[in-house]
Image (cartoon, rainbow, N blue to C red; front, side):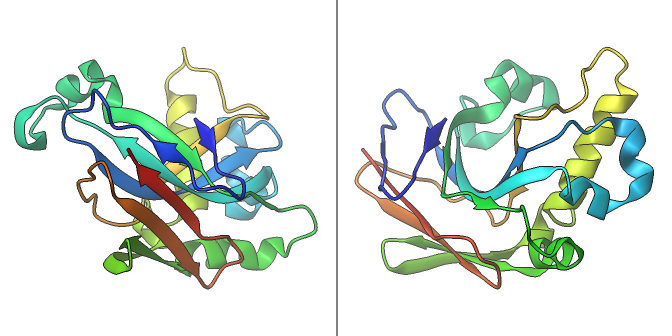
Length: 189
C-alpha cells in the first residue's frame, strides 16, 4: 500500500503479467462496524468512516486473457497487485446527510496522460461506496468465522470504471467531479 500525499508515486510493474488499473474509493474506518448495526442504514455507516480518498488498485492476472473461475482468482491472490491511496478527505464535521448522495453520484475521469480513457460514477461500485461497505459488513456477519470490520481498517469499494491494461512508461490520473476529493496521479516504471 502506497500513500500518495502530494507526490506522484512511481509504481514498478516488474514481475507482473497482465496488469490493469482500477480507480476506486478508499474508506478509512474510524469505528468498528458490526454487521448487526446495518438496521441503522447507510448514514450510520458513513458516521463510522473517518476519511475518504480516491485510490488506484493495481490488479494482475496469471491466467490467459483474464479468463478464470472464482477458485482461480483466489489462488491468484485475488488479482491484487498493489494499492495507491490519494489524499484523505476527513469526514469529521462534514454533512453526513448529503455524503451518501455525493459518494453515489460523483463522477471520475480516468486519464492516461492527457487522454480520457473512461468516465465512471460512485454508484458503479455496488451502488456507491457506502452500499459497498454495507455489503461487506453483512457478508462478514454471515460468515460466522469472520471478524467484523474494525476501526483503523482500510476498505476499497470496487472499481468505478472498466479496467484498462497498463504498461511501464505511462502516467495515469483519476479526477473527481462533484465531490471534494483530490485528483490522484501515478506513473508506472
